[in-house]
Image 1 (cartoon, rainbow, N blue to C red):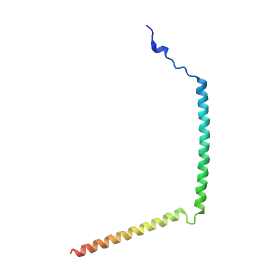
Image 2 (image 1 turned 30 degrees about the vertical axis):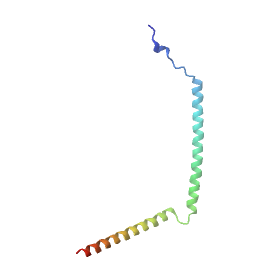
Image 3 (image 1 turned 90 degrees about the vertical axis):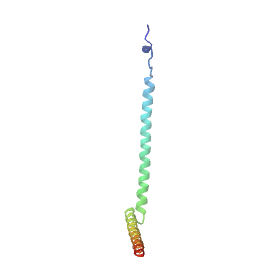
Image 4 (image 1 turned 90 degrees about the horizontal axis):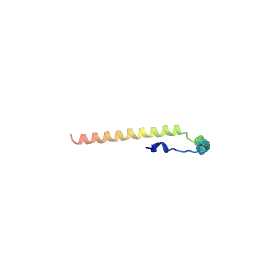
Length: 91
């Protein structure tokens, strides 16, 4: 009786595997170089844009935070006044 499992072999062309691996590595290096150049250009443009702004992003964020706090206090005061007026009408 013949064993059929031993006759099944994977015959891989190692030369093609080697060339494919080398091309994949070269393509990865080219892609990473392109990614680095793109990131550098975008970061440089963002730095220039921030440098040219009249108000720095930190100052702008601080002003928006102060506005939000003021609006929150005003809303709370209005709510408390309305609640006090409602309670006074029912007593």
